[in-house]
Length: 112
Image (cartoon, rainbow, N blue to C red; front, side, top):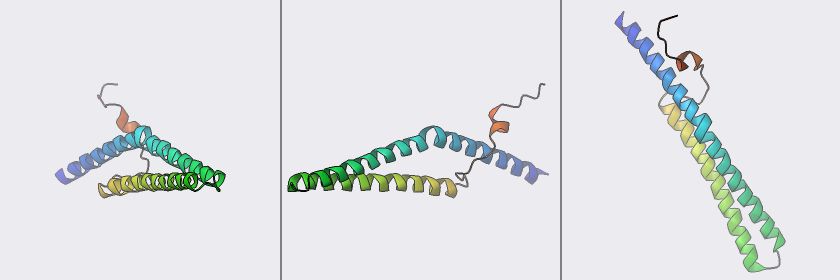
């Protein structure tokens, strides 16, 4: 009887932890990663524009190349952040898939 109760408590705790991680991902991490990715992409596009616009000026073209490089590095960092988040969540047994958290959102007082 005790292992079943302990197993049920472990599953409940796992679901509650996954709901917390899902909420943090949904509200903070994923929007932040999306914003930073968008900024890195805009830096990449600006660098490409500078590079093409200043094709005859070597110093301005080098500035465009640096902006292209910075945008590419930024996109790789954001991709890596998402990958690290996925690996960390998977290693703790809390995947990035959504679970039904509504049953665990309100405390069960027993009074109806």
